[in-house]
Image (cartoon, rainbow, N blue to C red; front, top):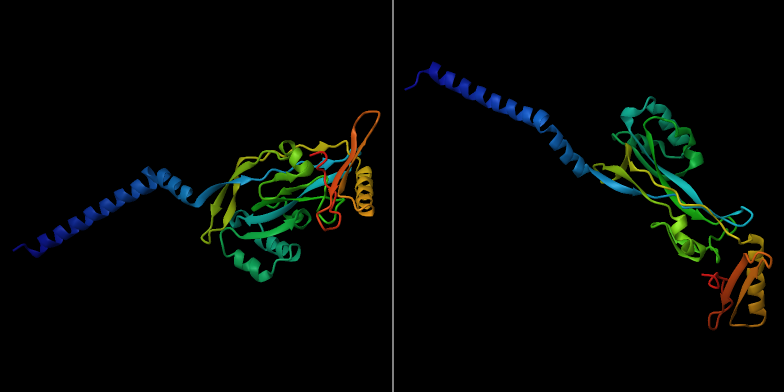
Amino acid sequence: MAKPAARLALIQWLLGLAAVAMGVRAVMLQVVQHSAWERRAAARDERSREIPARRGTIYDRHGVPLAITQERYRLSIARNELADADAVKRILVRRLGIANAEVEKQFQRAYPYFGGPFTAEEVEPLWRTRGVHFEVLYGRSYPLRPSGRDPLLGYIDVASNRGLDGMEKMLDTLLQGRPGVARMIRDPRGQEIAIPRGILRPAEPGRDVILTIDHEWQAIAEGVLRRTVTTHSADGGDVVILDVRSGELLAVASLRTPEGGDAAEPTASALV
C-alpha cells in the first residue's frame, strides 16, 4: 500500500500537470490562435452593408430645383470614445426630442443607438462630437409639387434608389450614383450599428441634371391640357412646347381620360 506521502506527491504532480496543460491552452488561445479566434468572432458579429448614394438633383433650365434629395440620420454612439457623455445626453433629449428614459436605457449599452430618423438641423450640434457616428438615409422630394406627385419627373423607389417613372426613370443611370460599403456590428438584440471608421468604400453621389424644361411653361401646358380635355370631353391629348430657335424642349405633357372617369393627371408619356 502506498504511503500517504507518496500519494500526496502523486496528487500534487497530477495537479501540476493539469495546471501546465491549462496554461499551454491559454497561451494557444490568447497568443498563438488569438488572430484566428478574433476573425471568427468578427465574422459572426460583423456584417457589410450597402451605403446608399445621394441621388442627383434635377433642375429646370433656369436652375430651379425640381427634384431634390433630403438627408435624414440615425445615430450610433461609441461610449468609450465620448469625452462628455452627459453633454451628449442633454442634446439628445433637448434637441432631438428623445425621452430621457430612453436615452438612459440606451446608454446602458456599449453602443447606444437612436433610429430617428433626424434632420441635419437636429443633429447639427453633434456633427463634430467624437464618438457619435451617423448613418445617412435619403428621401426624395419635389419642391414645386407639395403633393409629391410630379407627372413630368415621375418618382423613385426609395429602397432601391431607382427611378420608376418619368424623368427619374429616363435619367436613372446619371442620377443614381454608386453605393458604398460599410461594416456594421450586430448587438445582442440583432440591431445593426455602424462601426467607427468602418467605411470600406464611400458612396459616390449621382450627377445633377439640368433640363431644357421651363417649369413655368410646364405648369401652363399641364393646366391648359387638363382644362381642354375636360371642356371638350376628349379621350385625351398631348402638348409639346419647343423653342423654335434652338429646338429645345420647354414643356411636355400627355393626358388620357380613364373610361367613365374624369381627366387624369397629365404625364410625360409623350416624351418617355
